[in-house]
Length: 152
Image (cartoon, rainbow, N blue to C red; front, side, top):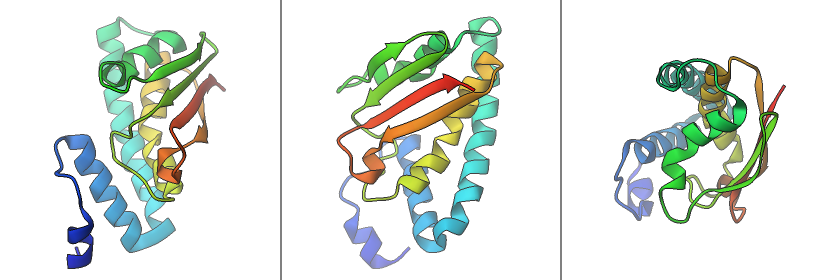
């Protein structure tokens, strides 16, 4: 890591998601778009594992609405709270005001790759294909992350 990058770090790293975000951002800065398939693959595999564990805890296949609620529970417990704009078994629309990975600054492609984890978690819990449409992203310097999860 360059000294310049080290000096740019303003906040202490306080949890594993911030570590993941920092590592992925540095990897992306170093290797550009070539890093994205690697990041996406690792996060997707981690999401498959986490989703299978969560599905067991939830008692088997769960509908999309309950799966998103279970997955986003930590974000619902911190301030500012995650907003659920619309919710059904077919489609869940959310807004998140703080990125747990602290991604900022026009790096939405990296965010998209890292979001493979959430999509994989939901697919594993629901046992269905789930699509994610990112309408807005803090990683793109938008005011919030605005995502829509829907059954494919």
